[in-house]
View 1 (cartoon, rainbow over the protein chains, first blue to last red):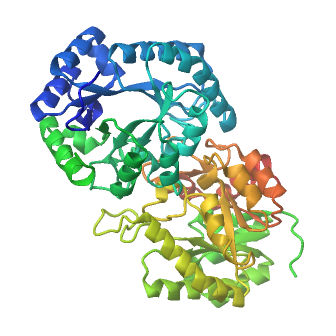
View 2 (tube, helix red, strand yellow):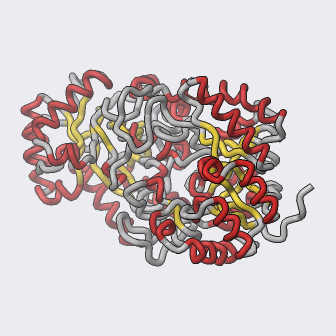
View 3 (cartoon, rainbow over the protein chains, first blue to last red):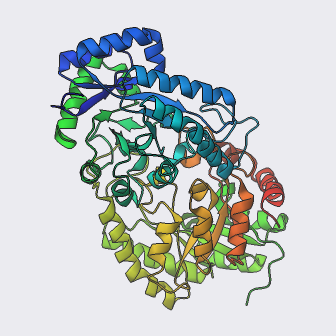
Length: 282
Length: 282
């Protein structure tokens, strides 16, 4: 049984991307942060067992492990890799494994198009098929998969799930303890149905992630995530809807942003905590 | 009564952006193109009366006038400007006036954020209010307003209407001959509900615009529109759905793209006609 949270603020590790897992854990302790969202490649670099120990010794909750997914290719290796991700999430006692489901088969983020499939419904169907295999596997290990709808500008290269409604349609074939959804303000703020869909997601919200949406977007749209208050999102209705839907978990700040990544991580952590206290809650 | 189209291909003038109205009209005649989509600023540069004459002498249909809109500020001058746009569309006998409804109040495309409103529902409400004023004005002049949902990546700075469903919700308060919608492949291809919404749009489709969605997106996401076949869109289901919904009008090729704009407009026109014949129809 986990201790009741005093603070629901969680540091997604890539907000302070220059920090290793050990440094990020130290940073959390130094700043009184109780939860952390980890990335698989950083966990691998630190070592899974060492990460488990570091997190336990620091008394941190692991609010998410990022990420599984990329299921649209139909490649059996993708399933194996996701099983490994689930095993890692179990070891880390992560509240969920974030699933970025993948784009159109053959499309590689940031690379010129080669041979691709343009069959979007088929790509979505492959996600459903893969999920039918992975959800029971996750369930057996006590891991919750968290389907993340990504902003529609990533539909081709990262996620053929673009709306919370779509993610819920897919999740609802599975028990809520096996498959939930991520509500990430950056990805869903524009959706005219977002508040209804957050209400519908009651019992399915596995992660609430916050950051702002920058305008204008930077040259690399992946880095269009800003510190809360520096973009265009009105956080209050979204945060209130997530609360009304009964989500009790940590709230992760996840910012991909060249300026943020170039700055001193301690300063960034202080800055996002302050912005979080002002715009999200404590 | 207009002559029955032999070819439904229409050149949106900004596909050959270096051409003035006169040059684009000449280009259409030279290439056997029967319809053109015009832009207000280019029409103004050519002169409205002269444009009317040029188009009539060439026997071209005007498939759209781009564009009215930017209605979210609540500024009364915006209504006046839209009334002028409606008057121009009437003079040009344009099949519709394309409406890009505007983003969050205060957000200027391409400019750093200053004082803005983040109240997205309120911005949408202002569009509905402005439309209640403009639709009857357009109706009196035989002009059809065409609400264009823009890709959600433009929600903050260009259009708080992001889906065809949203545009139809708004259009349905008005007679179909006064308010229709634009189906633009670039903006809607990702939408999980797009085919149902195109079917729902029967009788409301005022314009069908085609271009591809590039991946990766260029640094300026406004220029992410590609020649059909060079991006990620599967055009056939969209074109078939638009046909099944009974849309009888021209199909406009509208490409904003730095490489396309830098090339010889005659070559571009030949290239997009060829791509159109292959992927869209004739």
